[in-house]
Length: 86
Ligand code: SF4
Image 1 (tube, rainbow, N blue to C red):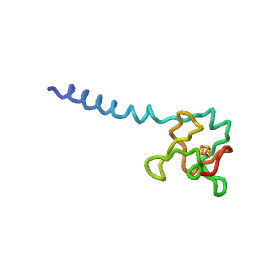
Image 2 (cartoon, helix red, strand yellow):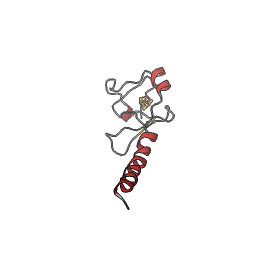
Image 3 (cartoon, helix red, strand yellow):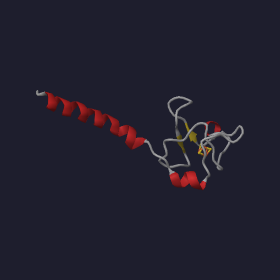
């Protein structure tokens, strides 16, 4: 196999490997705006201790919110006005 063909396959594979990261990262901007979402807690209230939070792989990872359809970038240290005690 010649070198240029090998590079096309190598970088083509790399590009394909990056698609899931881009495709699955999403924000529900409409819900974030309407519920006044912010990346910082409100006193002792945060997404991490909200009943709506769907945790990421570790406690520090971004997660989801049951109220934010399709949003995969909710911060455990975030907060919004529909916070509900877990
Ligand atoms: S409802 Fe608001 S505070 Fe609760 S997890 Fe979702 S974004 Fe965070």
